[in-house]
Image (cartoon, rainbow, N blue to C red):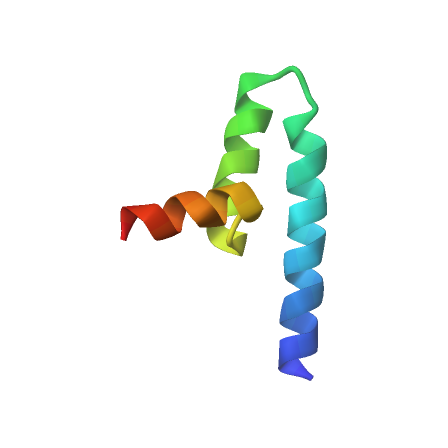
Amino acid sequence: MAENFLNKAKDAAKSVSDKLKNVDNEKAQQASEQIDKFTGGNKEDNNDNKDEK
C-alpha cells in the first residue's frame, strides 16, 4: 500500500514538473529541475546520472 502511494506521488510530481517545463519562467523551470532530481527525473536525466557514477 505504501509503495502504491509513493508511485502515485511520484507520478503526480512528474506531471507537475512537465507542466512547469512549459512555463516561460526561470523559477518554474528551476522548480521543475528540483522535482526531477527528487523523483528520478525523466529518461534523459537518468542516463546522465548513470554516466556520472
